[in-house]
Structure formats: C-alpha cells, structure tokens
Image 1 (cartoon, rainbow, N blue to C red):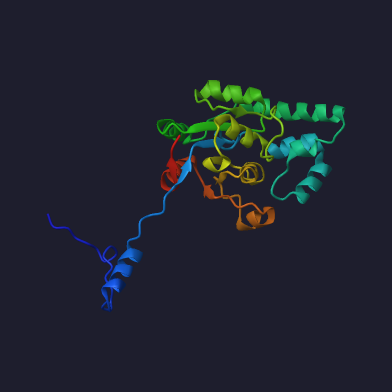
Image 2 (spheres, rainbow, N blue to C red):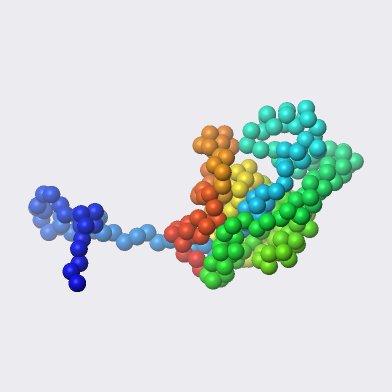
Length: 252
C-alpha cells in the first residue's frame, strides 16, 4: 500500500544547501529529539469543588458568620475570595467557637447532597494503574472526608482536613504529605478549584499546580492581582489525565 505524505508533514527547503554541514545542521534543527519529561510521583487534590460537586452555599455561610455589613466589607477587600478561617483566627474564643459551629452546620448540610465530580473515578483509576500516589487536602471537616471515602469507595492517603494545622493556603499540609511520601515537592502536583487556597498552597510548597476552573470564573486579571499563575488550567478532571500523560513521566 502506498504511503502518502501531506504537505503539512513533509518540509523541504526552498533553497539548495551550500555544504553538507549546512544540511546536517538543518536536519538536526528540524528533527531534534523531544525534551525529556519531568518525573511526577504523586498528585494531591482539594475535595470540595474538585473531587466533589460544589454544594455548599459559601456566600450564605460567610454572611451567617460575619453579618451582612462585615461580609460586604471583607468581600470588597478580597476580590479573589474570602478566607473565612483566616479571618476568624484572631477573634475571641467565644466568637470563634460560634463561628466554627456555624461553618460546621453549613458543611454538614452539604454532606447530605455530596456528589462525586465527573471524571474523578476515571482519573483515580488511571493514577492507580501507574502506581502514582493520591493525597487530599481540604479545609472541610474530617467527617466530610470520612463520608467521601465511605460513600464513593475511593481513598486518599494522607487525607488532611482542617483539623490539621496550618490550613491551606499555607504550604504546611502539602509539605507534610511530601514528607510522608518521601518525595520532593517538585515531584508532586496540587489540583484544586481555588486560586487563593489550592494554587497558592502548591506554589508556596514548590509543587506543580493545576487549577480546575469548570465555569471560567477566573480571568487573567485575577491571576495578575493575586500574583498567582497556575502551571495548568482545566475545565474538567478528564483534562487533568491528558495533561499528566502529555507532560510528565509518571514514575512512582
């Protein structure tokens, strides 16, 4: 059977070569070997909005914790998102206790509607086939992590909830996982839907970062204002699988 080469495949010079050395240089530049891929040994995921479909009404939660006027003020000062856990850190013990209870109430209401994100099982199955470690870091409570593991039969280890301190965006949780796995941060990818929490955590730890932006909520202006630029940006977990295959040597 004849082999047909399209014009887009076969590139021929339009001018003759003056010497064999010029021809050799042309061939070397045109057909240079691909650059070696970076080794990746583990992937760490956020949970809410990444492994699970978003179900918590965060604006309503923030209003309940802060009050309407304070919510508006804090939101105006933090256009990329409110870090409610950081905001209440310096409150009095009584106020903190009430705030944490309010937050936990909203989170427990979300547990009843917990749904796995499309593509999660496929991506985790792919990582398992390559023997690549899977970890989890969430600012949700341990009860939510346990329910996720039990309901969907997919486990992550380590799986750190907000009971582990410090929380994201501090790099502490991610560095703890790297230490547990005995890998370097630059051999790990952090995947999450929050620029201010997940990407910030990954960048500060020295890991690769992948922002899951299903709805296109983030603009170039958001990256500029926050001074945070993810290494990769996807609209689905299925795209993460493609990125891993195309850009990394997946070696446990």
